[in-house]
Image (spheres, rainbow, N blue to C red):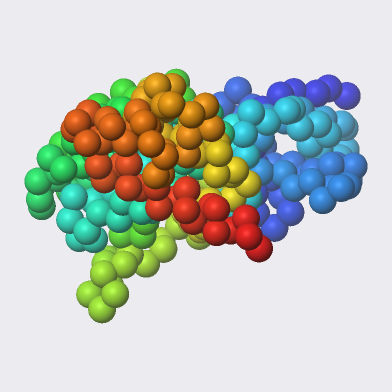
Length: 287
């Protein structure tokens, strides 16, 4: 009998596929793991027990540094939040909510602008100066090397609205057509989901990529309105100079955040994003 550690890279029909030193083995979860509603997730670091005459069993799951329910993934090092320069038009509301989700979970962030062959992306660059922005074209494969360099040595998840080209980018990174890609629906201008289950792929520089059906909820969950400013780095930078310690940066006098907006030091669109999300969270607390 022996135990070996690995990472869950796929789960289908009650069976889990674990990467142990580059070799994929099939295992089942030990019954004790199912108590208290615990569910194994792709990305879990686990200990697998091997016995003679029986199939391997996952007997232990190590502590997670972060996890998500939809999609069911764990232990993300970085999130590559993807949007298109055009087709579909950038959805900044979705983008900002995904950034907040990543910030809340202490996940490193890169913003990937795809389809840069179709339109200018200067506005996006000016809005998101606080983050690493990687312009790419999945069709022309421009910028893929920079994206690959960001992923090196990390376990990353792509996130973004439908149709922005996440699957095409992962194909480029993997350098083979490992994923079915879908066309944009002309009627709705939204991409059809082409990823049906969660899986981890390894690329040749040692980085690992979660392939997921996408983050299905963009609602801000379990966030206190008073904590929101901490998830906007540009708001956080100016928040310390306000007259009131508990300033909400909405309509209070002598607010250094609002002053920074007026003086052009803080991007107005990002401030309005903060304000709208703050008021949304405040409204939720009423119910």
